[in-house]
Amino acid sequence: MQQLVELYTSKLLDVIQPGSLLFGHSLGGITAYFVAQRLCQERPDVAKTLRLVLSACNTPDECGMQNYDRMSDGNLIDHLFSYEALPQELIHEKELLNYFLPVIRADFRMLESAATLEYEPLSLPVLYLWGERDRTVTLQSALRWGRYFNTPMKLQTIKEGAHMFMMHQPSTVAHCLTSFMTPDK
Image 1 (cartoon, one colour):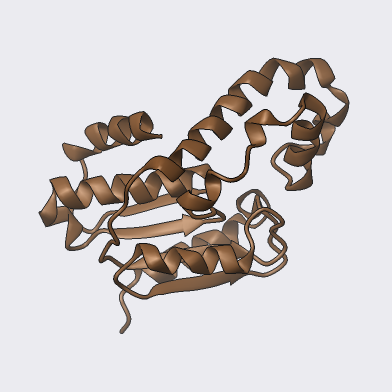
Image 2 (cartoon, one colour; image 1 turned 60 degrees about the horizontal axis):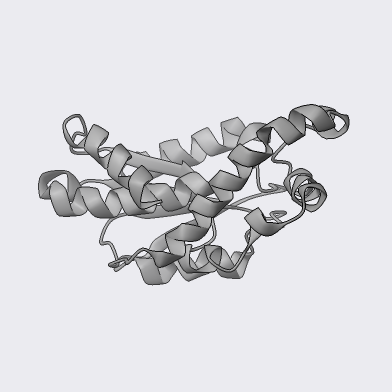
């Protein structure tokens, strides 16, 4: 995770502008949090107006307890299908699924390594998008993100949203992002 955060931060440092928004879903949410932390350290001018949106992600410390990368191939595939991370059409494509399993396991190892990173609570506007049917991230887990911030976290429930609600409700997500970025009048 640390290497990914360093890579993204290094690419953003020269191009990010005040008023920017970082968005991350699932693994990307944890990555976005740590990139925001680094940007706040490296670019105080950006930190003053930076906004963060986390979506369908457990807290970093919870990720260290999952052990997904140690699941059998069959159990890991079942787990991925259980939260709609893969299209149902792939369920019978075992050869194709087996081809991607090493990459998926690497993603899970990286996710679990987030538990080892130190964090400082951030002071910036934050929106959390939570799918009410998410079997991977509970409401309690979403609310635990509050300790990662010195500012109140706005929680937006995505009605009928499973873990991958972004794929099924893009207009709802777009509306939430637009509302978050539009100053109150």
